[in-house]
Image 1 (cartoon, each protein chain N blue to C red):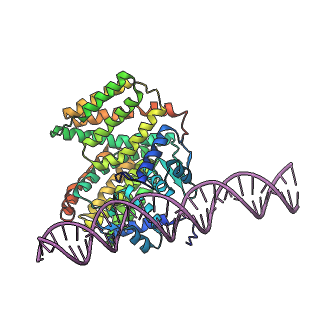
Image 2 (image 1 turned 45 degrees about the vertical axis):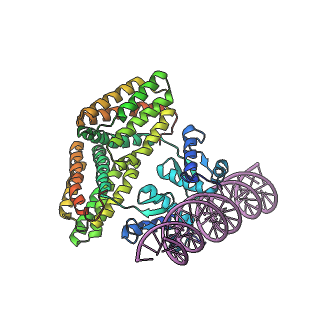
Image 3 (image 1 turned 45 degrees about the horizontal axis):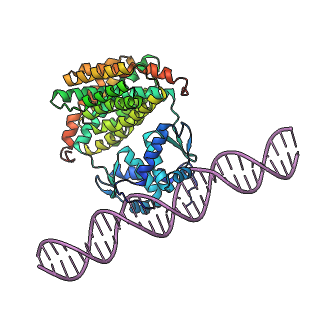
Length: 222
Length: 222
DNA sequence: CTCCGAATTTCGGTATACCGTCCGGGGCAC
DNA sequence: GTGCCCCGGACGGTATACCGAAATTCGGAG
């Protein structure tokens, strides 16, 4: 096959394609991802598709059974609950570390910019933009810790959260959400780790029950 | 090829083989993992080897560069430092959750059994047994939370820690280590989350500097 | 002796082909 | 009418083959 741009491989494109299809809902939860079907759709052979599926399986977006191949992961309420616990453990810690680094003079402007984008999107009523900015906000706090391992550990889960934002379409209060982000940002920049920790904890945990409630009619319990 | 036992696939065996080779030092850090070489060594074709390498790359044990293939990950001091932060964020949280579940009556005996094994190994001077039991101890606390996502997130890092135990061969104080585990176990069973949190934090963070010091002559800084 | 460039070799990326297993449907026996 | 068995298609698991890019090596010029 003719693949001129050496910078991007068929596997990468297949992975991106499948991931987009899952996020957009083209491949619903629990639906099978047949290798031949995908390879024909994407115009490549099965081998790159296989590799892409293995990567997505490692990330948790798809599950592969021994002789049945890959299916889009069927999220359960338990999964979402576990997701909140993982976010608590990682993001609360990250908020503290980020604050400590800010106190040492490391104060990048990205967080402010992201929040400006979020408020801009809120004004325009751009739901997708809001979700993207919110996800970026949480990702940026992790980035501010300078810890790539933390970042890599949380990234798949942030992707899932981003996905869930769509399922719980009518986000209860984007304004309140933004307000909390603004507050967290202030505290991080102000260099008070314990306060940042507490705010991050509350910001995440307060949404556990509402989200679970909203999803209780869409997702299987376990 | 004749592969009668359907329960195990060539990919699984290749993955296990390569992982073992890395842990044992047969494939040193930074050494290249050539697909043809591996496929010939393992007696399979390149395809299963590729998949195994992709899995190990997702786990972080090997790194793959666009046109150079896979190499055993070269750990740096920065990586190890980041590892300690990840463990702090996950294990401290897990200690709290595990304690809370214990307080609700969920009190499995596995933790005690693992510690008995650790002390038994300590008496025999069985270094490998000690390392295995210690790793199992930390893994069990995660398991006690009942959160499979936390478990999946920490597992690769515990594997790396287990690997590091070998590099820092002469573990300073296995007795002290065991004593701390015993103490943590007591507190978890006693149902005091805050105390468990504090003990877990200290137990991990107190070893950061010594380990970094011990590795400073073996690993590159960054 | 050194340096540079071209040929060769190496190696990952991909395609195609084959095999064994699993699943579904239809027919035959009871 | 029902249940069992056999057969065919579907699909994942694996092997082999080819291609292009990159690294290495070797030979010739300075």
